[in-house]
Length: 417
Ligand SMILES: [Zn+2]
Image (cartoon, rainbow, N blue to C red):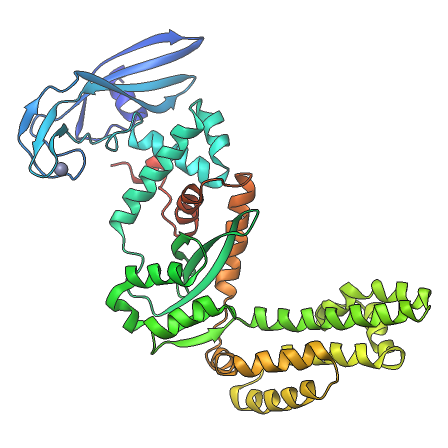
């Protein structure tokens, strides 16, 4: 086999690219394989930015080089002429190269591998691995994400979506994230959590908002008010996870009151024991071990108020597993019981549940919960942790879209022609 044939294969050059020459030299200990290439002569020149077939303009800045995928111990660079064309839209501009994205010092294949690494690990790990700067990795991520977003319309054909918020930085810095219930993917994200932010999503969605059948969200009014306004026909479901978390919060409030009462009454030991109850009280009954269940059962004698609070929480959880008609009756019973429970946090919770009752019933009827958003949130938290936080919300959004909207690049050899 000729070396040239070998190099064409090793560099994944494909049939539209001609290898003209190659040379190997050393730079700081590591060999560098320099491969001079050109497009096949019959390929028509296109604008580097928009891809429109355009007449030639001039030779531009002469030869350019692009970092390519490493070959063994050697780094590799492609070298080629970079003539300019006269694009009807963009004027004189560097012509498109088959092997690289516009305005990048990297080949497409190298960039895809770098971005792949940044997604599965983080940008700094990718920068270290390939010996390039963090900023270069970041720019590559932005280019890849923008290109992918230009190819697919993530807002097309939506029927059921989940809207949620995600923290990106300490000090109440949030993103609003929208997921598609059917694909489980993130389809939109933007900085902020406000009516204005949700409004931006509906601006992007346009007329297609009329096709939305279901929207799930937590109890946040800033989401619900905008949805009611912009997608009035959509059924709004409330996330069961949030409703149950309201109930566990109420249990915890009761526990704190009871603990303080015991302590003020001078029952120090009982108070101490009570403090340790917290995790047992808040966990789901089916997740408790035998001795923990015994603790709960003994509460019925030891502290009836606490036991009642715990029962109210568990009973509310059970409602979400019932069929709709049974659930409706169970909600009536629950509201009546909670309202006269003489436990202030549950009296208040009963008012909240009444407020969201339509949404709660819709959730039970359609079995749509924000679980998909919650699982995406867990993944988004992992992205944030891997990156050790994000200062720039846009950089965070780029990584969320690459990873959770499935916009990440295929490895180059998966698509090589
Ligand atoms: Zn153009």
